[in-house]
Picture 1 (cartoon, one colour):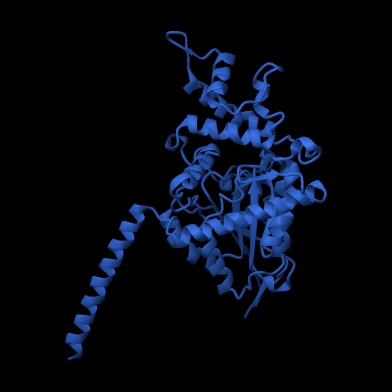
Picture 2 (cartoon, rainbow, N blue to C red; picture 1 turned 90 degrees about the horizontal axis):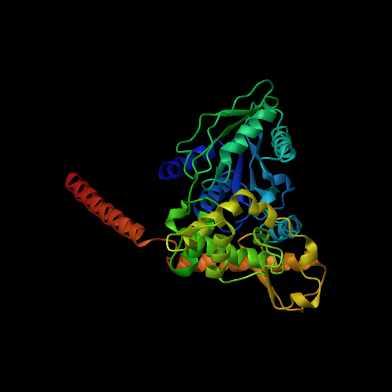
Length: 402
């Protein structure tokens, strides 16, 4: 990751389009400040003015050889694992808060999504018919599907038999080096690089950092052993209850009369009883039950929890003062004073969540909460070494100057 971060500015200098992948379940947590800063510098170096709408013609940067594309597309992958009712209000909220960002929802197991993205890249390449080729760089956090995306784009954009060019894995950190240039379209010519996942430099301190770690472990962005499977099960139970308080998806594991619960121990007892997870001494194995619950969610429960319909959002007096949410990053309270249709209300709630996230990130950076104690020591040592070298150079210059 460190090696790729150092190479990123040079790669961006050769890049026309950046495909930044994020996880639809963590649309805010999967924002990487390291990538964000590098991409903004790349845009500025091309003369790109931030804050423009996606259709603004100045997104095409003039060069001596004609017009060059400078485009950043943020792709929220695994869209089938979040409720569909949140797509449109999320797009509106992102458009209001980040008007220069082009948002695209996709799932790599849906060929229609891959074809739509391929057509978008082709249309960008055709903006400048005099360019020989267009270069695309795929970036994002670990395990968001970068390699899978490029394999799928290559299948659509290159005629004939196209064997899988990049190896993929369900575990984070599989891609360790930048790939060789990969052709993903023949007409027009489009090439792309795959890159190692770049994790947040530090998850943070206190409860916020712990929550980030649990979220990323649940989506297999980091190894779950770093958090503990019971912590993952507890947080997952909490989130499923927020997504659908009346009929959370986990109820399908139990008999129809089973009511929802927020008590983790009681819940894991139910799971262990359901699957016969009993240890010696007739004691229920809650550890195995937690593992089974997390595995169920990753294998099938995520799809079931995403099938919540819009009828469950706001309608009716029973939802007053109820916690609701979308994915793992959006959470709000309905207090009965909301005005407007469901989609408008949800959009405003999402905008409030985005504002709170941006404000919290800025405060954390200002207070140094985004840097671990180990990183602080390394930076302190590097500063001391740089100071000593500067003094040494000054002495040498003074001696030769005299």
